[in-house]
Structures are given as structure tokens and as C-alpha cells.
Length: 289
Image (cartoon, rainbow, N blue to C red; front, side):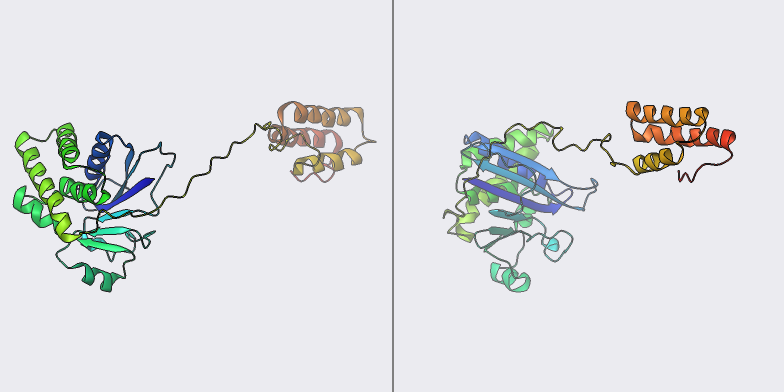
């Protein structure tokens, strides 16, 4: 069973780091893990999204998560942003976490959210404990608890590891860790059914493809009537059968070019031959090149 987590936020809020913390914590719990961000220009305040997958079995999925089991929205201003489309792909089993001081009922009524909703003001917790609204550790902690598969110990190690990798000072790491553990402990109060199964995964069918010669599906440039140029050559050759030896020599030589080098080269060459033929015969016999 794959647990799919999607993080929505704005540049600078720490959702990329949050996805990495969840990924590292899952890895410490001996899960197979993927985590990756997706954003446009790296601009502070621009909407961005990140993804984390965890499973007890190897993960063969790649790319974006279209139907998340857990949907983390770190900025409530994204709720009404149609370009961010934060509710895309949510279903009845999705748990949507919204960073807001409003109750879950308000979010559901205003935005028509499908599935379960958890609201927790992680910004307030970050401001009180860390002193700034950096949400990487707090958002990661909420998601870790809602998976029902990640322990507090693994979360603690993951926060220290990931924040140390971006050269945060030890004092700031300790504050982030304190904020993360606070959020981790708050979830049972906010959402007592977090541990219930979220979604039964459909078994992925693996199809073995047999080898096929690439020439089967590759059109040949030498095939009869495969190009517009081929029909021009045949029509022109029919008109020129009774012409002089010099004229036949030029047309025949161009056919050789076609056979050796393909129609694109021959087209340019035939345009030049047409000019030369005209100098000998006084006309081009209806050439359309």
C-alpha cells in the first residue's frame, strides 16, 4: 500500500523541506520513499507543490501525485487560488490539512472540500516557538502523525538531519524540533481518527512487452510515393523521356542522389539541377519546386 502525500505552499514557507523531512522519517521507519518538489521560478511567495510517497513495497510510480491520501495546505490564501488548484484529485478518503485558525466546518462549507478536513494553526505555533513563520518542521510533523506509520522518534531524527543539511544553527534546529513535537502531540486532540485506514490501494498490473523490430513502426523515406518530391520526379521523368542525353543525365543523377541521401538533400539538389536543365532546354517542364 502506497501512502501519497501532497504539500501545497508558497516559496519560502518550507514545503520542499517538509516533504524531505517526511521522506527521511519514513525511510528511518524502513519504508521505501520518494520525495520531490515541483515549482516554476524560484520566487519567494510563489505557489509551489511537493510530493512524498511511502510504501512497504518498492514504488514504481513516478511524477506528480494526482490523488493524494494526505493533502497538506500550508497557506490558506491558496484555498481560493484557481491557479494553485489545491483540491485537485482529492477524494472521499483524502485527509486535507489546512493551516488556519478557522474550524474544519468553516473550510468545508466555504470551499466544498471532499473528504476529511483537519485544521491546525501551525503558523501560530511556529511564531510562538521558533519566532518566525517557517513551517517546514511543523507541517512535516502533522503529516507524519496523520500517516499513522511514523513515530515521534523518527520524526525527531529526520528534523535534525534535514535542517542540519541546510546549515541551520543548532539553536534554530532545537526550536524547530520543539515546534514539530508540539504539532505532533496536538493532532490527537484535533483529529482523533487519524489512525484509521485511509485508502486500499489497487494492485498495479505489470505488463511485459515483447521485443519488436524498430523498423516495423518506422516509416521509410525510400518508400514509393512516401514524399511529395517522389511524385514530382515520376511525373517529370515521364515528360522528359524524349529529351536530349544531357537532360536525361541530370534527372538520372538526381534520382541517384535521392537513393543515396534521402529526399531532403535531393530536393535542394533538384532545384539546382532544374536551373541547369533550363539553361540547356529553355524550359523547366512544369517543375513545382
